[in-house]
Image (tube, rainbow, N blue to C red; front, side):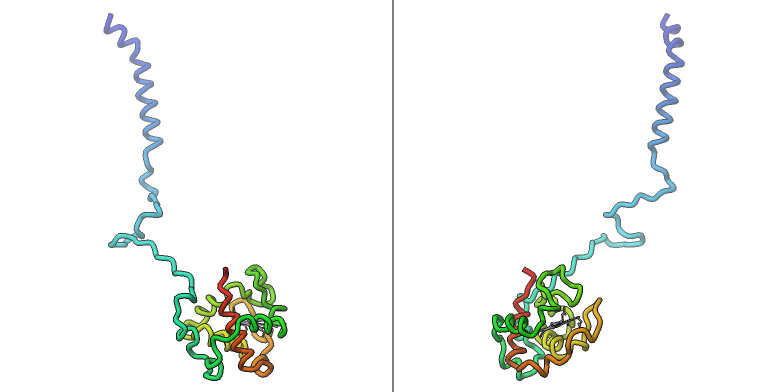
Length: 179
Ligand code: HEC
């Protein structure tokens, strides 16, 4: 009886084994493909892979006054820290704001001034931010911001504006920190 019963179930058991073999076969990893995980070290790396630290955003608050004003012509440096409120008025009176917006998304004509102070820190790494701003105003074609052309910004502001005007404009631009 026992033997008969087991024989009767033999085909079922066999089918079960075949089914299992198929399932396991289908799920087994394909040895021809390499598993790629973002945490895996690049091929050939011997030491543990450390993802690169993101470069910290430029921050003018980390600079000393001396570093901020480094490289300004003496005549202008003597007038710093200047008057930012008067600088803002001069930006209106001289038409700067006709091209430069404080809205970070308004960049069609000229770079936005939304984060001008921090950008001035990095535009020319060897130059202090105030000196960069000074040069950008009196000689705008020396450094042309990526994506723009030379010759759009008037190059005669150095003649029109007094040293006090320039100092105040720079003082104003140094307050624009993207907040
Ligand atoms: C006719 C449009 C126009 C006017 C007016 C204008 N600018 Fe510009 N300005 C530009 C353009 C275009 C650039 C980018 C090209 C370059 O770097 O020279 C620029 C660049 C600058 C930069 C460098 C910006 C950066 O992101 O590095 C500063 C600072 C600046 N201008 C200040 C001024 C000031 C201050 C005035 C007014 C006294 C002024 N601009 C008037 C068009 C203008």
